[in-house]
Figure 1: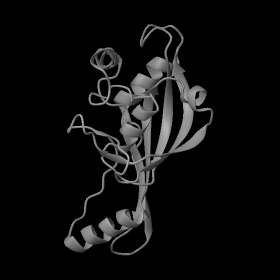
Figure 2: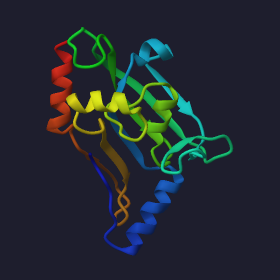
Figure 3: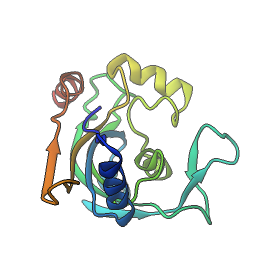
Figure 4: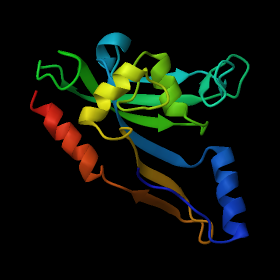
Length: 181
């Protein structure tokens, strides 16, 4: 869910495409992941710099593959939720709300980088095991990944513009239900 950008004409398309290529477009995502990221990584803010390419074992997935295209994501730990034995997720498992700032734009970049850290996004049908996704979907009906903000130079005026999308109600409800634990 969240913000998307579309071009209304070819000139705008090529302008935006160039900005993405130059990495001048800034994107912010929110996601909820399994585990205590702060505890496992040891930092409130850190960067993942690992190349992403097509998974050689499963062509429908992406993976960290040496020699593939560079991919860099800054991760900011926002808060821990759950873990109080409320029985919503795996007994006392802690979940972590993250802000993710991808510097590059590879397919499934945030999802792949977080799975590589052993912190998959809640309700991710592609990058989690079958048992875990079944449990997740009982509490969170969809992938907990939200494109919250995007900033770029307007293709016509050149002025820097920014667009935001607040966390939707269904994902807010999931957070609220977990925060009580």
